[in-house]
Length: 91
Image (tube, rainbow, N blue to C red):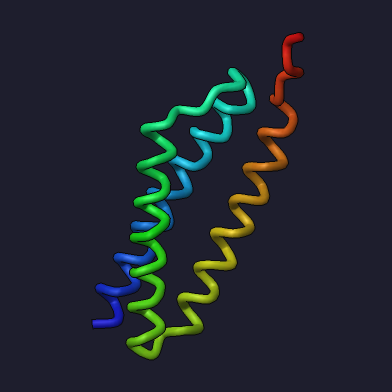
């Protein structure tokens, strides 16, 4: 059962991370937000939280914490990379 919960958590985090990177790049390069994508990211974030909580409830808290920390490091890296592409606001 832990394997299924781990797989669900990894899938949710991977999907969330890839779309998050796209959203941040679009925002940095074009200065726009794609509202539908942001809405989808919010839903995915909720799904990832549920999956991580399910891992913790199954006694797999160490794995959930590692996965969550890895995801946070990924978002930090996306921030570093997208900061290089950020456009100056046009006045």
